Image (tube, rainbow, N blue to C red; front, side, top):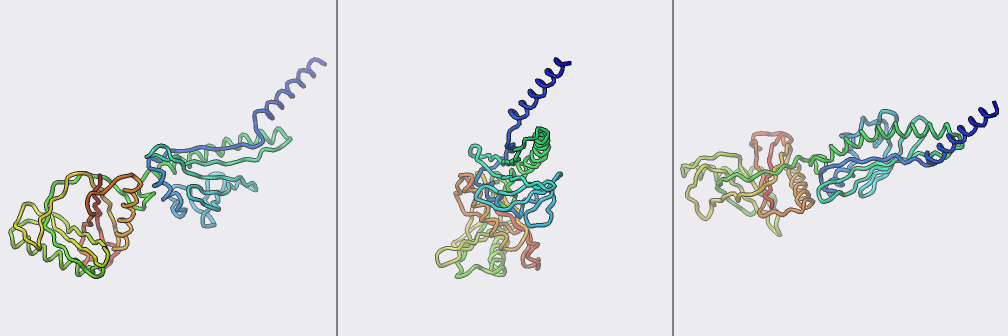
Length: 309
């Protein structure tokens, strides 16, 4: 009997020693997922908390509160590349940080770290917190995987889908004019009409949407419009024959008014900068529907094309 008591005491002491040695007083729960975009580009999207609901579960009361499986995540503050908040579970609050970190030139780690205060003389409480940490890790790991998938897209980071294509061999007839201010839609279509009439007069065949470039320079607004044609036609000082330079080009679909197009142009320029690319020529915008006939500007459809190296 005495031996049994001694043996049990040794076992209990060993288990207690194991609990206090191997279950720390501060449990760190962490994980990461890879987004296949540069860190600069991911930061652009990551710091826009209004878009977090695209990868976080449903929002709850509060501007930046999200209901997860077992609790609620509140984001309180943000920095350049991190968001600080709390994970609320019943009456307990655990600090949590989401952050990004560059992984090479074209990938980014989306990371989280949550801390559980495990200072307790009760071994049962320590063990309970250990298994709680395992449950939270499973939940947050699934969540951060969704973040990695989301921030791998250009739409998440720039607000638009930006794709890269090869330039197709094409000819176009173009006309250009300088304005003192941004030309109106009617003024742009007046130029398009001039080109269309010239192509028809010279037995040409138009085979695509109007292509428009509006660039604000020092004191003028340079405007060039062109129409793709099937074969060469005579040109002059007013109507120019242009040939697309073969190479790579970025393509962005935009649905909305000219302000939305301008936002997409800026986003594309940010994309080029983040990717360490350069542009050999001016971008242009294809008008995929007639803006004079579509009265609701929110339904205008445009395609931005931006040549790049």
